[in-house]
Length: 152
Ligand code: RB5
Image 1: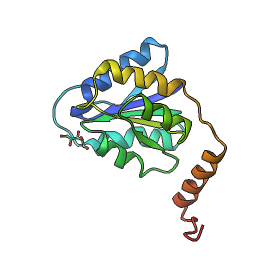
Image 2 (image 1 turned 90 degrees about the horizontal axis):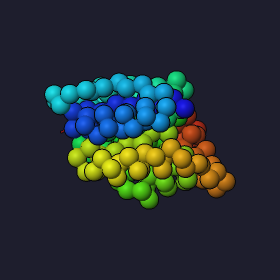
Image 3 (image 1 turned 180 degrees about the vertical axis):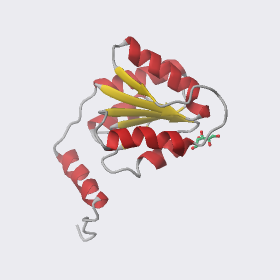
Image 4 (image 1 turned 45 degrees about the horizontal axis):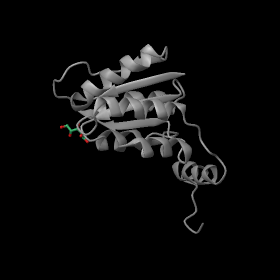
């Protein structure tokens, strides 16, 4: 599996830890930065990962900023992206089971590294349940294409 990863300054330390964890597992990681705590604008980095996932250059993405909120807003502007801001094991698993999330977003100022790595591991191992959840994702795809009928 190919994974793209990026952060702003506030998510940098966590992102570095996650990148090392993924590489140790033999996963092909494309790291779009940043690699230091100098202040940057999160959209400049979020779009790199979201674009790679949106266009199918990588299967999954992981983003981190201070809260995870800014990166989530950016990533979900891209077609085919289902970015999930997760804050514990439950949300990490559910974002895969029910939402087929292809980008995991984590708050670097909220999560301990050990917890975040467990979340990443669970997120990578958990499959999508499909069924009624696929029907719901199909509606989101329609919405993206401007085809969603509000009378549904
Ligand atoms: C940076 O201070 C902070 O605003 C950013 O990392 C993120 O939390 C935005 O949503």
